[in-house]
Image (cartoon, rainbow, N blue to C red; front, side, top):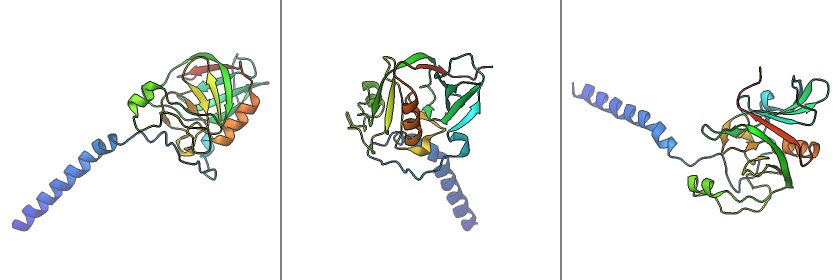
Length: 197
């Protein structure tokens, strides 16, 4: 009987640890931005998130960027009912938005100054970080209007296809460089939370 009680006690203790595990992991820092981490360029994206030309119906003119946060894809509209589709990482729950903007500025290997509201949520972040391979903005950034949001690269290719950012849209570095070369300042950007029917 004593062995049964010990076994039951051990089982209850183990269940307590298992049930408390999500609370512990919920208190861990947000792993979406890792300043100083150098991107693993050999990381292979799932085919769903790899750049590809797709059929795409829209009334938007060629050259327009359409971002579907629900699909986690960015489309660059092409002539003939097609688009170049890129896999992206989007804002986590509570940080998604929609709207109509233009690319106001573009930078190669941009510096990163996290906005005050981001520092408040993630106080471990640096106040400034020079551009380079370890910068969370990655190889290129396209600034959206006068907002704090950007389309940018990432040093975390494993976050493509996920909801992890504070509202920006991230692509792997070779994809963001490709997009950067295709679009000028002034490009129209349509951000949608739900797919168009």
